[in-house]
Length: 115
Image 1 (tube, rainbow, N blue to C red):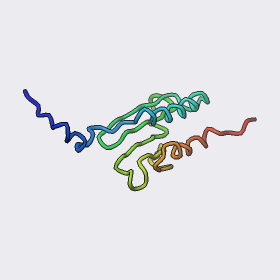
Image 2 (image 1 turned 60 degrees about the vertical axis):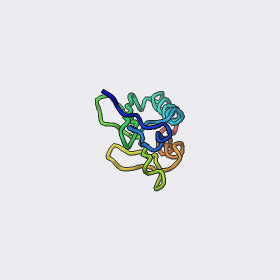
Image 3 (image 1 turned 30 degrees about the vertical axis):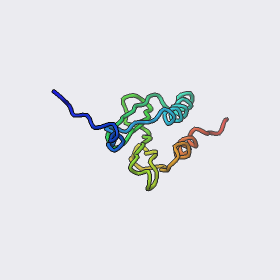
Image 4 (image 1 turned 45 degrees about the vertical axis):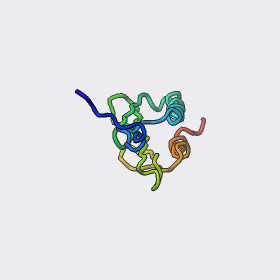
């Protein structure tokens, strides 16, 4: 069985089969995740790489629905930004072009008054 291979000059024209987070994006997300784990707020995460979106889901417990979803949608790059933070109820908490500024909405929840 022979599968036709496109010429190497046309490889950049084909869209990727799935969207994934880049290593630099994952390092930003995992550093935030580590701080929440150290604070005892988050306990588990899951990563989904689909055709049009990559999702980093955060769980309080393993068997629950995700508390937050950090999504990367490259098709939204020219519109409102390809990164978004979605709450448990499906409401978009923040959307933008820069991942670090989008994740600030979650960092505010980490800051608490010390008694």
